[in-house]
Length: 72
Image (cartoon, rainbow, N blue to C red; front, side, top):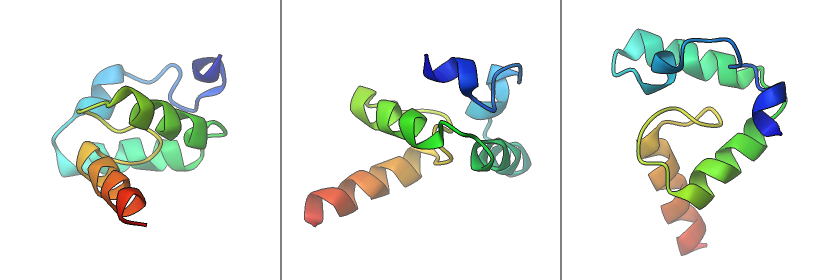
């Protein structure tokens, strides 16, 4: 399972749903060193996750990515 190998395993889940820019930056740094980041991002995109940091991207960044992919 993806979560078993995730860098965020053991971290407080609230960190990945924070609105504070410092907390969001920390969540993204954790994702940056994660071995399953791409799988996490793919799952978030497939499931339409509307909140939180997944695969190193915020919800707004994921929406932008989806828009760029659709335009390509």
